[in-house]
Length: 316
Image (cartoon, rainbow, N blue to C red; front, side, top):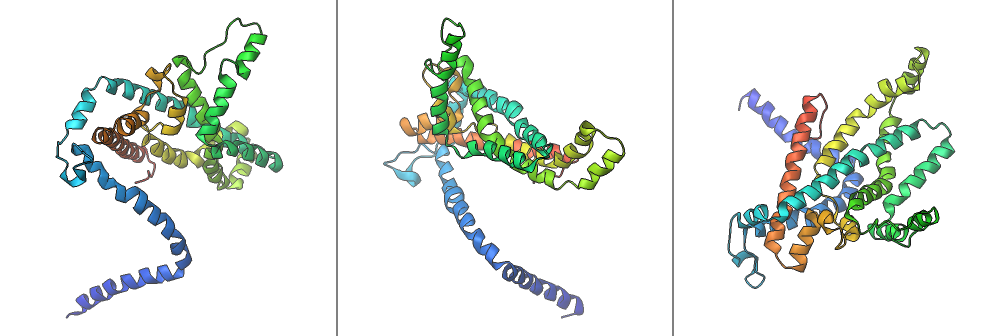
């Protein structure tokens, strides 16, 4: 064996040793990682084989392996179904509303909190806006019904102010999307500010001091220092949000929907539940869910590619 081969063999042999050294150095961090990894393996990756029933005519009596293969039959039925356009429209409209009104809300909140100089006041506001994130959708839906039903606080106040009739906030389809977007903003804005405040805490204070010496007012400091500091964070979270463009969240939509607002409240998530669980069409509902997942992956890769084109690092 010549000298070059020995060097290569030596390098190959040293790599596992370096990995073992790294693991020994942070052994407790790797031990803490084990539950999270097991959770994803058991509950996220292992069940993925079940998507194969989207290409089968699944029959519980025949079982998973003996059910006949049908190719793209369920996808074809879904795309030709008259409900497809309505579901796609409802899902996209709610997602875009959440994207337009809900996505900038944590950024605005973080920028406003960043300008507060009294620490006790800032921390109090942060705590108050975080709390809704930990409230379940069931309680939020109950609060919404209590406040906005025909005998709720809002309608009683409007009657007292001289209005002759109540407004059907919960049963009129015109108000459904506004309710959904309002709930999402109220629940998630505070928690979303954590990431942006963490990004803002890394801004060097000397940049602001230099800007003040140069005569920059608060708006100039915000435009030239603060916003560029969180730009990469905004792009990363936007990419992740686009991956969920067909995912409106089952709990919230299901709890707020009723027979009177069904034409705008039925989305892919509730459709999969109704068709798959209550009607037993497992293969068909799996095909719908798989369609959602594929579109989400395509959107993530597209947004990541676009982010890199405009000079950002992206997430992949």
